Image (cartoon, rainbow, N blue to C red; front, side, top):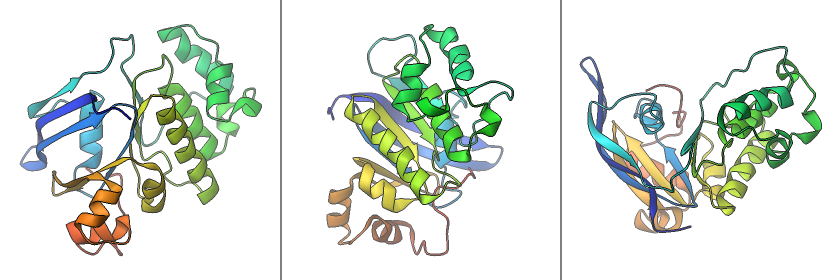
Length: 241
């Protein structure tokens, strides 16, 4: 992990009519790390993710990419990735690769553990395999920053661990991974830095060990409880704005 940021967020706000989803969000995303965005439903996580990848324009503030100059600076896995049926996993990646760099799909499939499923049609893949295929698609062109919006949503525990392990391996090879997830245990095991959103703003941020010490907490969930209130009945990082 490098102290040099790959992305800088300065005073980002976003309103939908009279509803303010984000208010004055500022943060630096360090290079070569796993950064997790967590918070209760409605805290602005998905809105922030969509702004970071250019899918939404902020009402105010700026997002500045500061990583190396490359054809594809940011890769993106949306919360519910969809692929055209009737095509195999390899054919799907070959199509997307042709738009960026023309690379063969096999190394991408191997990177996410789908080499054995290369010839299977996307509609025949399990939900976890489709998520891994989405991660492979997000890494086409070797973007310095890969953004994953709830990559383990709806997956069984084993596949969720596989997805997070893939994210950690990507960061270990120098790619910055920014992800959102409701699985705080996996976030705690994987992330280097956490941004806690609440009511459209950053309520806390920093390394997990530092946050546990700051809030005298035994776990990341305890940190979240201290920051935003009891989360025992609230799904963390859901699909709402």
